[in-house]
Length: 133
Image (cartoon, rainbow, N blue to C red; front, side):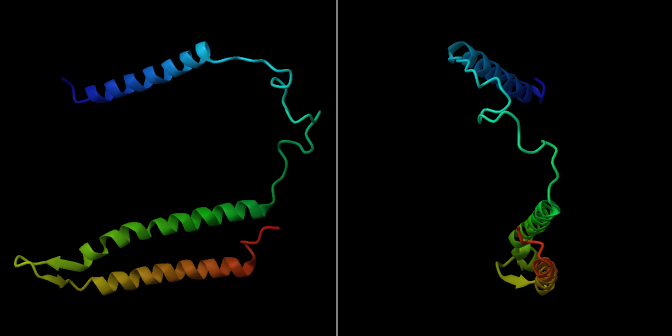
């Protein structure tokens, strides 16, 4: 038996589930056509106020990029926090735990990293990059 057989079974089950749900909803579900359902705008407006390809303020993109930047940078703190004890201490054969010497260095390194992030955050705050007008 191939090692890929369970994967093929899973794919078959997923495809079968999708097909079953689509067919079941089409057969059992009620289909009511309303006059406004087929129109582009259901709110009663004859035409949109602004074109669909309107211009956005640059603030929208700045806030989005800043969110992604700080979000991704904060994700780097998770593995460091989970592995700090394992990287900083060593368990001896007799059960004693001793510091290996890299703990203070790793802590200082992460404090520098967080400090740089904090400086960037303060800079963006002072420049008004987080203001939404």
